[in-house]
Length: 328
Ligand code: SD4
Image (cartoon, rainbow, N blue to C red):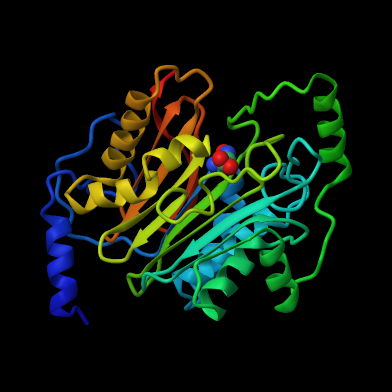
C-alpha cells in the first residue's frame, strides 16, 4: 500500500526535472528531462566487471523475498571470497609491508550503518561491518580491535595473502614505485547498491584498498558518506578509485544530496566527478568512479577517466554498462 509519506517522497522525486524514464541510463551524455512515474524494482548495481557475478548473488536474495541489506551483503561476499580478485578480500594485493588490510562498510534503509577499517586476516569484512552495525552502538571498528571483535563473533582467522598476490608484491618491491593504477584491468573495489521489492535501499562497499599503500592507510571505502551513502528517502551512492579524492568531497553523501535536490543519478555522479576535477590541479592518474541508484530504481554512473564500468541487474537482466566519463 502506498502511504501518504511514501507518495509525497516519490512525487517529489518524480517531479524532479532530471529524472530519467528507464532504469537504464540514456545513451546520451545529458540527463533526460523525462519524468518517471513507474518505479523499477528490484534493482542491483555494482562496480566493475566483478560486479556481474556479485549481482547474481544479490539478485537471488532480492527475488526470493529477501531485503536489500541481505542482498548487498551476499553480493559483495562473492567478490571478497574470490582468491583471483586482487583488489578485494582474499587475494587482495597487500600494502607496502606485505600485509593485506581490508576496509568495508554497509548501510541500510534505516540510517543504520557499520564499518571496519585496517582489518587483517578476516575474509569477509562486510559481514564484520554488519555485525558492528547490529551488535554494537558504534559505527566503525579498526585494526586489532576490529579483528578481535570479528574473532569474538565467530569469524575465522585466514591468511589472505595468496601466492599470486605475494609474487606481485615481491616484484613491486624490486622497484618500489608507489604508483597505484586503478582501472578496469585491476578490477578494484566493489561497491553495490540495491533497491528491494519493498522499495528499500541498502549499500555495501569493500576493498583491500590501494595496492602497496602505506601500512595503516585507510581510503574512502569504509567511510560512510565517502565510499558509500544511503538515504532511504532519496537514493544511494558509492565510489571506487582514489579514496583520498573521494573523501575530500564527501563523494557519496554529496551525490545523494544532489539527487535530493532533483538531479538524476547520472547527473549527480557527473557533478561529483566535476567537483573532484575542479579541486585538483593535476588529475593525471586520478581515476574515480561513482554509481548511484534512486528511490525510483533509476541508476547512473560517471568517472574521471574512460574505463570504469558497472554491472546492472534490473528487469530480470544482468548487464555491464560503460560509465560516461570526463576524460578519455
Ligand atoms: C581506496 N577506493 O582504498 C579504494 C580503492 C579503489 O578502485 O576503489 N580502487 O582508495
